Length: 119
Image 1: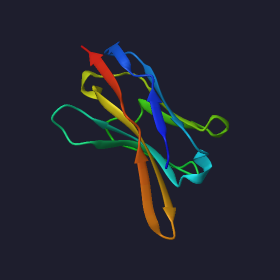
Image 2: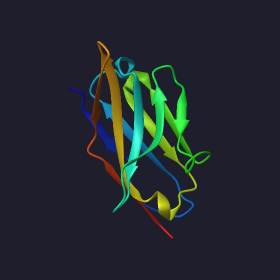
Image 3: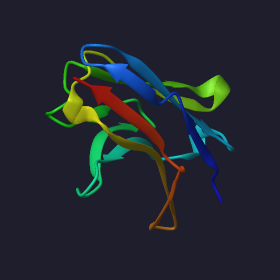
Image 4: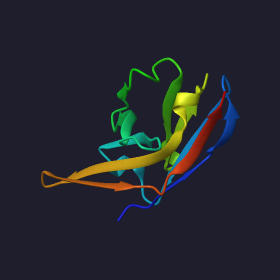
């Protein structure tokens, strides 16, 4: 089982920046994809960005140009750099890892880290 630990959340003013980290217990090379999701109060969890094992990325329209995902394979860590933050970015951010075994999809989640953007 994968263990994912997020960190880096906090309170920031609108226009500010935060960098989230997701440290994995295993090699992130073994994952087909890693992603960041977020869930705001009263809303469904939504995909923020996904990065494949090959490095291709897919961002939600709402964060394009402001958020950047990156990975440090040596540290088994994925980062989410968030710039120009807006109050609507306030949510709990979750790290997700996906892998396939014999065609069956597996995934795991971190515990989440709170991001609060004040206006």
